[in-house]
Length: 280
Image (cartoon, rainbow, N blue to C red):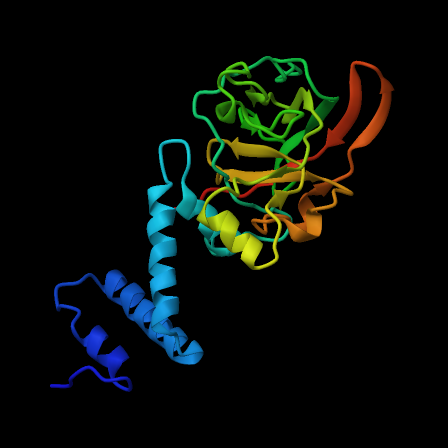
């Protein structure tokens, strides 16, 4: 029998895990205790700092509601969400890279005709988005669903402004044909800040970090027999590309939005999505 001391804390706590705990839970919790106790020893955490941490986590939970998940925001801004995404979506060279899902996807967006305009309020600079959905051999994928969503010209999603934006504004789903082509009209997205009026915002300010995300269009691409792809395409030249508050930018996802001479399509963004086969 060993009692709790500064030197034996890790072994004593992990030694209390029961024999009936699942192997996976045992592995996760043992590692968590190891790292957590090592962190506390490393920084020699004071009681005042520990109380501040407890207060921070309490306030983070208290601000969570149906339309806001502050713990996900905390995970995002600490790079945890992107690291979990990277570990769980390793893919062969040539496959489109993933990035964070984000909190603003809405199930049940309408399936629209190819080429339709998803901007229902008519605001913002019109952009034509087009490309193909391909497999790793470069063959087009038929019946892929390209689910898209973005902010409006003021940097807000429709669910953030239900009283002023039409439902499903800047959202839609498009089904590819035999050629794998998708095309729709939306707006050129703008940069926007993540919610920074809560504990996470105060943390960012204390760290000298800003809350801004670079302009992007969200994509979720699904197809029979293929792994689901969740990603963004980012506007090249955006000032926040190298300092995205949630670390979501990958170089392969930065796209040159090209100015056109067509008044009905001020911008154009072309991007092909390459999906991996679904594995058992």
